[in-house]
Amino acid sequence: MARSLAAKRRTLLRQPIRAVDVTRTGGIGKLVEQFQGSSIQARNLGRCLQVWENALRDPRRPTIFLGLAGPLVAAGLRKVVRDLVDWGLVDVVVSTGAVLYQDLYQTIGGRHWMGTPTANDVLLRDLYLDRIYDTYVDELKFEETDRAIGKVTEKFPARPASSREYLGFLGQQFPSRDSILATAARRGVPVFSPALIDSSIGIGLTLHYQANRGKERRFMLDAVRDNYELVQILAASKRTAVVYIGGGTPKNWINDGIVMANYAFGREGEGHYYAIQLTTDVPHWGGLSGSTLDEAQSWGKIAKTATRSMAFLEASIGLPLLAGALWDRRRLWKGRPRLRFDWSGDEVRVSRRRP
Image (tube, rainbow, N blue to C red; front, side, top):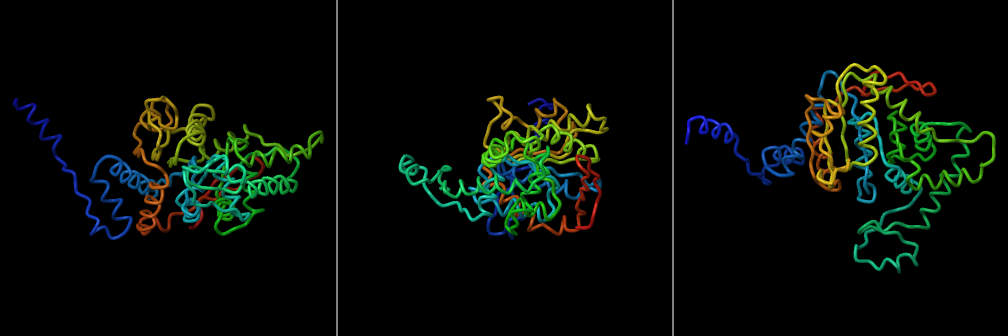
């Protein structure tokens, strides 16, 4: 073998795979840290932990955006997401409406029930039970939740509003220590849902619309105001980080936001500096949910120098492991200052406050 090739060979073989030793993990944090020296999606998940921790410890205090898509509450991840908000590990939440609706459904008293993917779905329809793969939900309780949303919206001012303002209102109207929305409202964490009507919250809002149509003044969702509010947060952030659980609209919207902030609103800076994603989609179909974080660099959405990791892993497995690892290693991020968002209409002032 030529010397030049032998040198390249030695370079490529510098770092051996380290066997995962489950007898010496010392908790979830140590286990996921061990993944960093393993292979396949375990290594990618281990790197996700590393990237998230880097963002939490960065002295420039990046604003961390959490994008949520998929049947996360049905999968039992409601408390995991709620805890990430409560612990201050994310600063802004962007979600599909479905995740937030199922959070409200449980606040109102609904539950998710263990089922089977081989159920008789025609029989389930007769029983007013809906199926999410191997999980059942109560259609009668869904209707009750829809009507509760429509009714409580009567208390909201009869004017246009962003999804952020409306979801903060719902978090206050349906208080619960276990709720994602209520915890975000209590902690002052903005929650956006740019496709809110594509969910059962949209059904509740349609009931409200039906009861108020023809009135000169009524509540309306202003989707473009969502953009304006998001861009202000991005513009106020010296550095940003993104955590995408699933993909879909939340991922696209947050990524588009940094482009808007940079060239349409004069923000000086890079794309997102830290980025992680858990997804079961794949890149070769060309869809956004599976598109790589590297691909996003071509759009200027992810910084050219960003630290990033993408794990092709189902969220009901990956997210609890990440959250548990972060909790185990909380001494590394305890004391990180929270962000304070002072809203005046559609204008916001962002400042730091104590944890």
